Length: 133
Image (cartoon, rainbow, N blue to C red):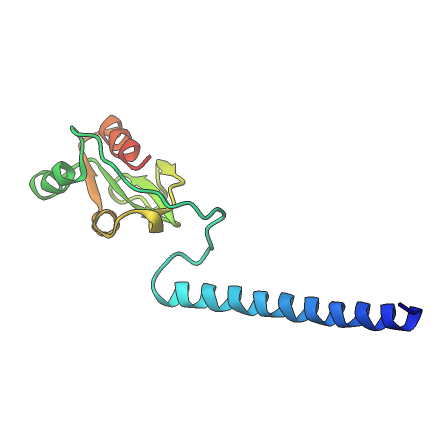
């Protein structure tokens, strides 16, 4: 091959690479926009791992939901900045947080967290947080 043909081949490969990078950037942008429109958290996941939630038998969400309706509870476990936060009544800053990628949880668990799960005390709130490991 001559010097000119190497130069032409290099330019052609450079153009193909630039087009591939632009297409990848457009696809990522479209993916983020569709995720935001569907109600998922704004920040994209840092790792692509599918996670399934398996509650502990004693402090499961079903028990917590019943408890939510029957007692006032001193703490509220709910979604906070894409994770889970534990709040005292009337406070806007959580006393505990857990970085759990909430959007990976089953839809039923997400709905429970959106409504809020009542905990009778801080240790019970920690048990509920552990359920989301």
